Every structure is written in C-alpha cells, then in structure tokens.
Image: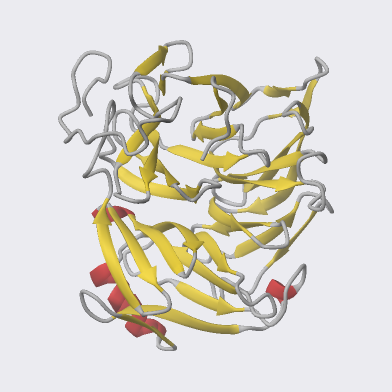
Length: 381
C-alpha cells in the first residue's frame, strides 16, 4: 500500500462523482500519529474504548470492567425504537476470542453520543466474528468456528438466545435480512470457509422468538457466470461456493439485491434476487484520491442514503475503512492505519452509524474503537 502522505496513489484517479459536497472522502489525509491512523481531511476522530482499559464515561467515571479483547463486528440499536433520535442507543459489538472466551458487549450512549455504560451481553461463546441487525432491533452474532452458531442479542431486555440460522453449525460470518414480507422475513447467512455456502432461512413470523422457531432453509448455488438458484442440496451448494464465492464475509440487502464479499478473491458479488442473476466486482479496482484498498474485503454496511456502501479491510500494512460510490463503483478512503505502523497486518472492524447518522463508529481489532464526525456538521450518507 503506498504511503498516502508522500507518494501519490498508483490507482486510476476518477473525477469526484459528487463535486458539490462540502466534504468528500479521500481528497487528502490528516495524520494522527498518536492514534496510528490517517483520516480523510474533514473528519474529526475521538477514541471511545481501548482494549484492556476501562471505558471512560461522560460523567467522569469509568466502567467496572476493561474493554474486551479481539473486538469485531458491531451494530447500533436504538434504546427506544419508537423515538430513536431521543432515546439513546447501544453500540453492540462482538469479541472474537476463542475457546468460549468470546461474546457480545454493549456500549450505551445517550441521544447526544455521550457514553453512559459498558457491559457484557453474551459470554461463553467462541470466535464471535460478524453479525447483522434484525428488523426488530436485535443483534445477530455469528460464531466463526466449525461448530459455530448464530446468537440473537437484545441490548434493551439484556437477553441472548441461540437461533435456528446456523443449523448443525459452521464458521458463520454475517447476516442480512429481506423484510419485504414482515410475516416471512428472509435471512441470509454467510460462512467464512473455502466451501462455506450461503444459507437462506425464511422465518415463519417476525419479532423476538421468530428465529428460535422452525423455518425453511435453502442454500446458494451459483450455476454459471450469470445465473444462480436456491437449492436444498447443501453439498451441491458447497461445491458452488468453492468455485465461485470462497470465504464469504459481510453481507447487505437493499431493494431486491444482496451485496456480499468473497474475501479470498477480493470480490463484491451482487445477487439480483428477482431475476436470479448476479454480477461480480473486484474491490478497490476503481479508486479515487488518497489510500489504497488492496487487502481482503471483510464487513460491509450501507449508509443511510444508500449512496455509499462502507467496507472494512482484513490484513495488509495499512488496513482501513472505505466507501464505495453506488452509481459508478468508485472506492474512497475514510481512514486507514499508518503504513507499516502498529496496526500492520491487523483488520478494521465494527462499522456502525448512530441513529442520527452523524457519528460513524469503527475500530481496529487489536484493539480500539473510534468515533468519526464530519467537521462540516452534516450526517454521513
């Protein structure tokens, strides 16, 4: 990865697709050597939590326990879904520790983004890596080991249960949901394995308890370079995964399409669920401005306007968080680790937006959580 402060990027430079925005990703970097990162100029950053240290609260106190190790995927859940901008929110975040030392934790904020509390929500699990949000404001946390399961965590009722999504177990990564039909929401679960096939689970109900009840499971079978189907034959689907979408990671649903990562091949795969066709894009190939997205794509998240989809990066000497502009597929850098610095070979994790979309949370696995804001005061898109 080229050093963005001294060497121009070797990636093709394209015109800004939104030239009239007061802030634009990747035009230049501001280096924060004390934090070990370079940030797109126009963003401010503060530290929310650091591995091994008690979490600082807005009232001057600190959490009773230290922030957990091996921080990973996260989501934001409003504490009052009927009034999400006023009721505060929880940053619900995984720990990818192994041997039943993993779990899920919550950092609780008031409506203005002040930290109020940090506590555990699920313990005794293993390699909690990715996850996803449900339409009823709970967090799904996926265990990424051979017998892993997908857990549902509610930070409001402070409860957690295993779901039916994982079947007999596997190296599960992330979950997306199509809630077009609320009576039968469809959940898509990826598996980080060479033969890890995507699972499609049609629930028979909505709300807390729906994922603990029986549903209908099928698997993604890509047929050729254009078409796919859902099959009941898991072995056939695993062969398809090994050929077309090895080690799938982050996944998002939007307007009839699934966007998911196949990290070993640096692919973004987009499934058209209505037409049963798909397309493939190599991540970071079309790049604007400073930085470089050259290591493995991992988690992803749509911004509120759906103009951008955000990505984390696993590995490389300057792992970062990147935004992809939807209309033409151009990638931009939001922030990245200083090349060859303390986060060399690490991975970025935990991307999530506050309910008002003005605070962007992200971290580096070993192990710090940042909060980014736009200096122009506008929300992220």
